[in-house]
Length: 99
Image 1 (cartoon, helix red, strand yellow):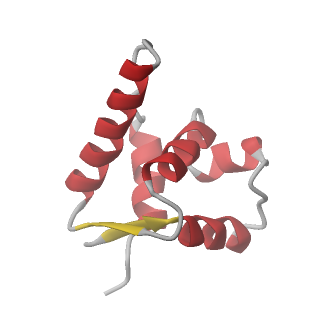
Image 2 (cartoon, one colour; image 1 turned 135 degrees about the horizontal axis):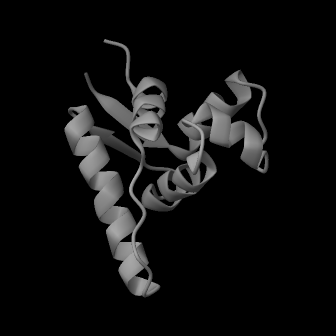
């Protein structure tokens, strides 16, 4: 399965679930619970406005997200976070592209 993310797609996902950008609790729940809002912000930071990032499979998607997290954490001299299995499952469900 292919996956993709763009700022537009993220806006559409939130709108489809009746959520606003600042609804941290709602986004947490949508994206797998704890730290869901954090990973939403990571995706927005990863993808340049007006562009779409695509991945051929879940493995590539998760690795790309984690690589971005590792790089930004290093810049901030912080320990990188790791998405939980629930975060990955939610992201995969929401970012999957229909065939």
